[in-house]
Amino acid sequence: MWSERAGADDRQTLDDFVLSAAASIGTIEWQGYRDVRYRPASYYVSFIPDRGERTIFVEPSEGYRPRPLWSSTFRHDQVSEQLDVTRVCESSPQQQCGLYNYSVALTTPFAAAADTRYWIMIQAESPTVVGWGWRKGTDDNRRSLTNLAGTTFNWDLAFALRP
Image 1: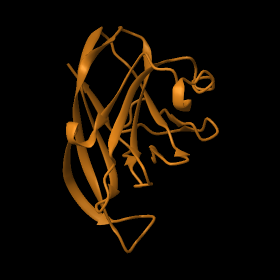
Image 2: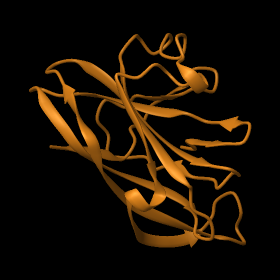
Image 3: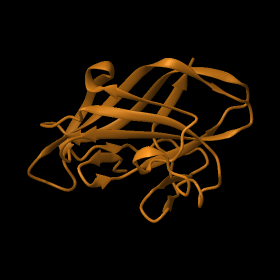
């Protein structure tokens, strides 16, 4: 799922989660893909309260992103990026794309309440389009969404939340 802000392009992709017990989230891990020749300059990460899927983009904050409870932008050198595998890019068969594992330690942990639905957004940022996408993950509740006409998808995205 393309989730990138570059120039006039602003593709936002979110997935939801509910924790059974309150937790302090200190690290986020996720998987994404991109052309191996280009890398994003940074990653915007945010936790957004559930306002219902149809209204999550109604009250955007600065930059037309949903109003977060917590957010931060991490430069590429602050994020651990490990290449997992390369393959031909789906959109450009003449190019090689890489599947990457990412991890970042949050500068301030996010306090998540028990039995509360949140949305997480991970978005690459670059001056020009890199083609970064968030990988589909293991089925949970099969709900993710994008800011493109408020489209919902019947799959989950690849991420893990750690203390």
